[in-house]
Length: 281
Image 1 (cartoon, rainbow, N blue to C red):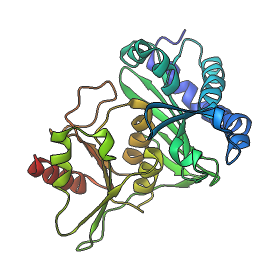
Image 2 (cartoon, rainbow, N blue to C red; image 1 turned 60 degrees about the vertical axis):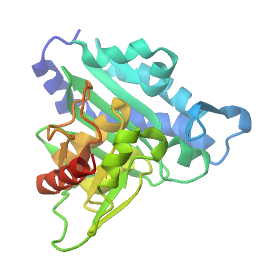
Image 3 (cartoon, rainbow, N blue to C red; image 1 turned 30 degrees about the horizontal axis):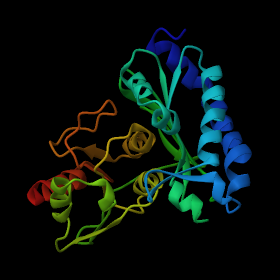
């Protein structure tokens, strides 16, 4: 049983490559053989037509659940599909055991349509703090990792988010309208001003990666599901970026955040986005 943070630090000092191997194997075994090969009976809707699940999601999560808990005895898994089946399992994020937060296929809609813009997300957290994350886009063969306090890398190359060029429009990925309340819609309308270019988001994990590598400036998201955000938020942080809720506080994976929230290339941009969202309300 993992009992203290030092033990997890020791695991992170030698075990991150094992986690990467498990993620790669899950994708190679359960996801990529189904990419552009899905039959109709392998695709289901959850909450609506934009919220899909496939056999790849389910089977990859089962694979990762077994592999990750073997790597770190005493740990537990909060996976998107397991929580859909039993919402009570989400409470493990607020528990005392180390928790793996797993989104087996982030961007399932893209995956179903044969678009390579999807990824597998894994984060390791303890006491509500994300300690490490793994972001793998198998169709693009890109793998990003982040360890708290030790930086972020993409395929072994350090990631630096930098700051937006002064005077240039901010490019911001935003929540799909189907996943926003009326109040959140009003907040997001605050981004429709001169100097800002909002657009609908794709895979949340890949949006975070785009910020961490300085290709996109910010996000404005209106939902809290930890499997969509935990891995990417640490990636952005370790690349030099920041994240803030509508109250100007860092996003908490344990919930209770003022929404929408933003992740951005630097703190100044995050604060600018929050000011625009607040003005919209």
